[in-house]
Amino acid sequence: MHKYTQLLVSTSLTITLAACGGSSDTSNQDIGSSQNTVNNTSTVSLKTFDRDNEPYQATVVLHDSEGKAILTQKLDNTGQFSAEVPENAKHISIIGYSYSGFYDNKDHYDRKIYTELNIEQGGSLGNFYFDAPVDNSSVAPPIDCTWVTVDISELTQVTYDNYSLNYWHAPVHNEDQSTPLTTSSTICFDPTKNSNKTMLFTLTSNDGSYSKGALITLDESATSYQLTNESFTHDGILVQPELSTSANEFRTISYIEHDFNKITAQPIKTSINNLNPIFVYPTITEHNMLTQYGDDSLDSNGVRINLHTQSRSYINSDGQVELNELPESLHSLSDDIINLTQSQSLNYDFSHIDERFSQARWSFRFKVRDEYADWSIRGPISANIPDLAFGDAFPTPTEEIQFSSMEIQLFGYVGGPKDYAQFRAFLNQRKPNSAFLTQPEYRQYVSSSMWISVNN
Image (cartoon, rainbow, N blue to C red; front, top):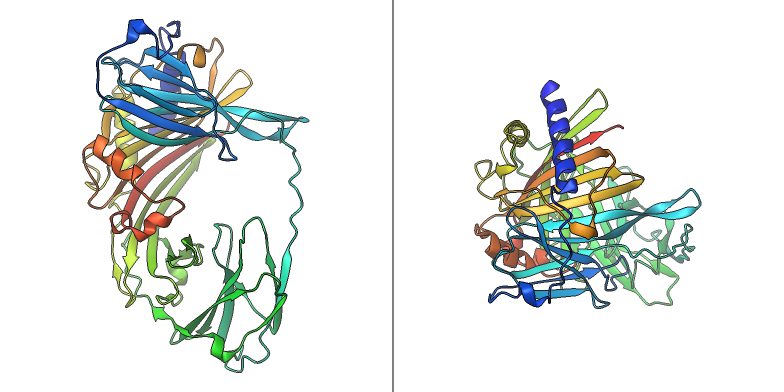
């Protein structure tokens, strides 16, 4: 356990140095200042939003290769930033606040920091999300259900000893689960989530030999529906769940492109020790994926360490899986991070772990005074994280910094670009709202992560 303790101490020291930023008394200079104008054709751009998807006025800081703050700009009410990259600029940070909750009779906000490494070639950095520091009610407004009664009394094919009948809303949300139906069930349609009254029903034999699907869309005014044998017009295709040897959980994700552009299959993980027959319904969901997971964890002396890998594979219309293997070892990442902290440097190189990885994502959570901060750093699979300073956008803390948690995630797509500027552009070409699952180049995803938390 000593090596993990050393990792935590080294990480907290890294955060302290980075937050203090060495010479963070660098005076703020506006991007438009003439003394910093450089002839350079590379342009970097980004957009910032609050939790209501409205423009957010964050502060942008440009850093040189050593991490010093060389340019600072408060965004206007459009939440957009676009500027030529000065010759000496290497990294960029976007700073604001995020809402953390209502307690002690008031709203609380955490500092939110995004840092993007190696932006000297310019390009679009995409969208960054914050929560606007305004008053928010601690009590969510009540949700009014629109109830629909589903009658299955005429569904003569169902005998409860041999078949299971389930339903999902369509589209499905991450917290949704399949729900078994009895002779008559009432289904809630939440108007904040369900834009139409659509349900996916599945009828499956318990021995796994048979499954049918029914996709039912009701009129907005409908309050009841009679489910019959004739409703089930879509054949279920049995999936042959070929899995990596290190996988311990998996789930299927399906996507209805022609009607909803939304995920519409059960997103709940299934243990490989409790493997039931899996069906997909290609005439309902044109795109079907299988995501597998490998997990390990350790708790000792107030420290929790989680190791996690995952990969997404495509399921063909015949149920065969185009297997995208998990990274071979969960522990190779932890060994590399330990070696990194022992080297007293943040020159990291994870390229040897898996050739499919293209990006490293670092996340830190820590406390300064009475304020928590979440700091996310994204960069190439091998790079240097300098001693970053933020000027007045995040002044040098004079108090002790209390480390809370850290995560490092390696991320990529099979066949994705290896050049980091090209990979960043590759990510920006994904369709929004999970619609990228319809794009072949984004189907086979892989990641490994290590998360460390300290009980302070």
